[in-house]
Length: 156
Image (cartoon, rainbow, N blue to C red):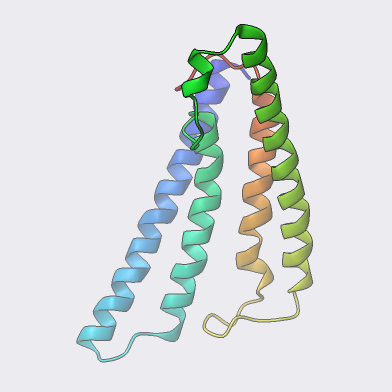
């Protein structure tokens, strides 16, 4: 993927995940303040905060992949021969593609299957908040696919 496109996509995902995190903090603070000042929090605040933190993680997943900050052991990359290092890099890329595609497929079918059920606090279909999972794994798959195994830049 081109460096400018990579940087733009990274900024976009970073912006979205920051907005989602700020909204989540606002909902949590509203629930805490209303619980201690008004002696009761709305039932929807905990549920919305739970779904929003899942959505935030799913949005952040692609950003972290773009800036190459996922947890993994990279100490061996410095000491292995170039050919083995290339094989490991291709292997990691294929694993990310396969796992994200598998999780996209499974989470999509699972979220669609819960269309008839509604959440207790919000009263919306369970499918709506659970669609954050296939969206997150789908964007990770696309970002990994377009970035490829032989990217040069570690940061944007």
